[in-house]
Amino acid sequence: MGGGVLQLYPAANILVATKKDFEMKNRKRFCGRIATGDYDAIIIGHSQFEKIPMSIERQREAVLQQQLDDIIEGIADRQNETVATVFRSSSLKRQKIPANEA
Image (tube, rainbow, N blue to C red; front, side, top):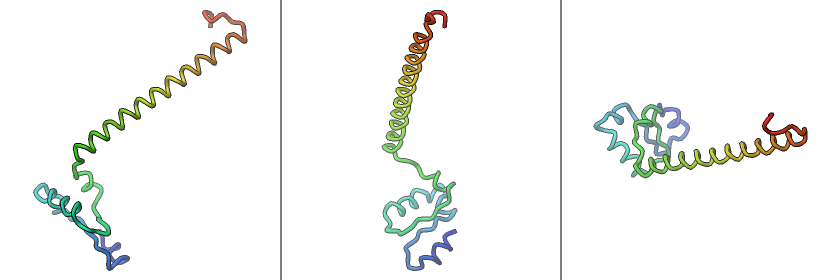
C-alpha cells in the first residue's frame, strides 16, 4: 500500500498500517505508535481509520458543534419565514386585498 510513497520519498519516516495492526488486540498499541511517533506520513486504509476511536472530548465537541449548527440553521430559517411573511403582507397591501381573503 505505501510502496509508491516510499519510492517517492525514500528517506521519509513512514508508518504503513497492516491488517495485523488493526486486529482488536493490536489496535491500541498501533494508535499509541501513531500518537508518540515522529512520522513524516502514516498510511492506513479508510476502513482501518474508522476503527480508531474518537476521544470523549472530541465526541462532545462534535455533538456540541452539530447542535450549534442546528440552532443557527433554525434561526436562519425563522428569519427567512419572517421576511417572506412581511413581503407577502406588503404585497397584499399594495393590491388592496384584505389579508383575511388571501
